[in-house]
Amino acid sequence: MTIPGPDESVEPVVRTSSGAVRGRTEGGLSVFRGIPFAQPPVGEARFAAPRRARPWDGIRDAYAFGPPPPQDLGAAGTVGPSDAPGGDDWLTVNVWTPDPDPAAHRPVMVWIYGGAYKLGHSGNPAYDARRIADDGDLVVVTLNYRVGMEGFAHIEGAPANRGLLDQVAALVWVQENIAAFGGDPDRVTVFGESAGAGSVASLLAMPRAAGLFRRAVAQSVPGTFFSAELAADIGAALAAEVGLRPTVADLSGVAPDQLVKAGQALAPKMPGNVARWGRAAPTITPYAPVVDGEFLPVTPWQALASGAARDVDLVVGHNRDENRLFTLMAGKLGEIGEDRASAALRLYAPVGEDAYRAAFPDASANDLYEHVQTDWLFAMPSLHLAEAHLAGGGRAHVYELTWPAPAFDGALGACHALDVPLLFGAFQADLAQLQFGGAEPSEEALALSSRFRASWTAFARTGDPGWPAYDTGQRLVRVFDAESTVAPYPEETSRRLWEGYEFAPLPLVDPEA
Picture 1 (cartoon, helix red, strand yellow):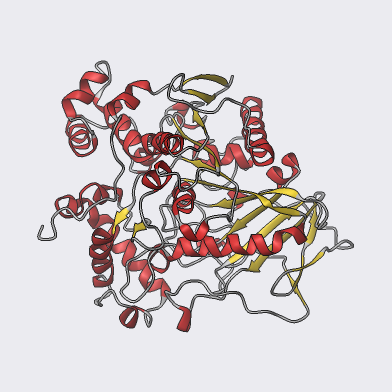
Picture 2 (cartoon, one colour; picture 1 turned 120 degrees about the vertical axis):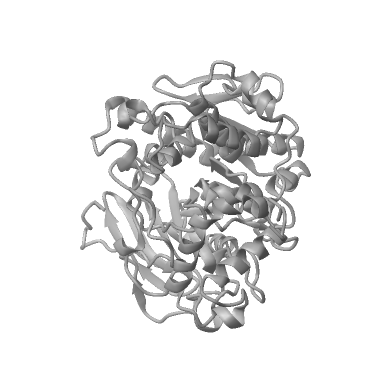
């Protein structure tokens, strides 16, 4: 990770609720890394809700990112925990600020990373927030939260959605401390992509998160939320991979890396369990937020439609060709035949295979597969979140990214996670290495990147990203491309196919299968 060199002569010190921290001045910003917002969730705290960080004496150096939570090593092109420091102080935040002056009252943006709820950490170079803080003249916070079995597996005797509770604890830390870093606790915007967007959607629906942020940006919201029954069944399967029951008593003595291996062992077996786990099975992701009736009482779509977050301004959108990234990772980009396309249509199309084929009469088998996978997993959940927010009395701005990734001669299209390097301006990190092929970004890419950041930071400042709010009449959205426009939602065919569909918690289909 390339970081502007610190000015050793100017090391800012800020006092937090737990103690004083010393950061560094880098490229005109004050940067603080690895500040604990909760105690390490190990020992007696294993699988528990986060507990307030212990206070410390003196001044703590906040120079280095905290260690990532235990997790998968990641897919091709992603940064795994081998690239980060070790230790069990997983729950930390990082702050970029133009000036840690309590009188500054700058808007605050809090980033929540994605990674299928099983990987990710805030020290990933892809999430270097200095360009956002600098361009937007605001304070940016990034955070770690528990992923995989530590954060999301159903474990008897442990609270559900521990990873989401970590995020709530980090937002509480922001409310208590961000003014000392020059931020305004009354102007906090949460933003996240993929599982991070699913987390943002969850926070909108969680009573514990109410009042902790004023605005939200959800980039590619996944539609995968588990029912309690499905989560319990998958949790039992995960524990069985290490020969144990899914209980705190059984699992608390198992080293975290061994539980990571349990998830890695179960994931490739999941597609064979469609009869039991339904649509969750082919995702090969045994983790998701659980609609547990307590911390997450209902799905985000149901919560927003009932007005649960009507006072929170929302930007939500997706990329046109989301699923192509996963097809590339599977080594099948552009090579999906009729059998796999038909199976996907039967499993995911809300109105049946024939109706989907009729709606896209000129689409190849490969294109139909990509359409229905993208629609089910990200595009329609994102659009429906905006429509639910409108129904509940809120305001939402919708976007779609249609600019194609440069690598592979454009065959990836506007694939999943392409918005991340465009937003952060980090084109040589993580999945951007696949999407940009290791090449320097073109002037066109840099200009689009600047527009992304300008829209997000304007929204954080004013609630207006620069295009009209979505409505069910004109359905105007921002289309991000080489020449960005405002136009009616481009995926009208898919919108109509999915109209009236409910993104309910994924069920346990047949426990005997």
